Amino acid sequence: MKLVIHGKNIEITDAIREYVHQKIEKAVNHFQNITNEVDVHLSVARNPRINTRQAAEVTIYANGSVIRAEESSENLYASIDLVADKISRQLRKYKERKQDQKTQAQPTTVTIVPETVVADLIGDRTPELPEEVVRTKYFSMPPMTVTEALEQLQLVGHDFYMFHNAETGEINVIYERNHGGYGVIQPRNNNGHTNGKNGKAHHVVMPEKSHSR
View 1 (tube, helix red, strand yellow):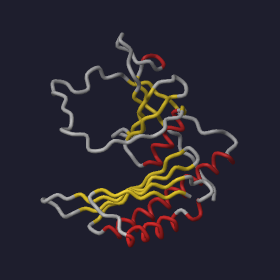
View 2 (spheres, helix red, strand yellow):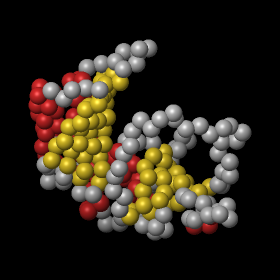
View 3 (cartoon, helix red, strand yellow):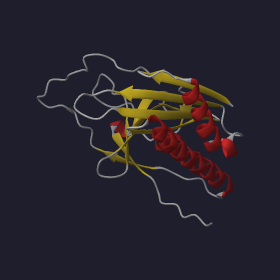
């Protein structure tokens, strides 16, 4: 298993490096058969108005999937402890989900409910961009279905997930809606319609699953 440690606004000392290896390797010990690479990002955010926050972020590449966890506190070692526990739980959920998919007689389906496309999302407001790009991320984007993209969204712990739609060949974004469920954002053609089915934005509804233990 490859483990890489990065630091921002912080020196990665031998003591910190040893502590990360100890905690993260223990967290993923039972999942090494599905873990290809582990990236650890440690950072310190200094804000004069609040206490210094020290964050630990772990990204795991597991058989084509990306599993992510992030925690922060006023103590770096405490943040590493918290993120190690969290990534262990994420890996357990990922492994259980894969096992469920193999044992279920019928595959999980996603119901797509069309909803009205909003023509103007910002109204009379002036769009503004941040003064500077503070972080750039690169990641592979293999084609996947909406169901697989939803699983990735739940694994990385973000509010949205960008993916290459295997059915349309387009770049889509799946996101968690404020009022429940998930939505899919699709590109729109010059004629004002989306490239998806029926020219509609999609609201994704996941059926509930019961597990027997």
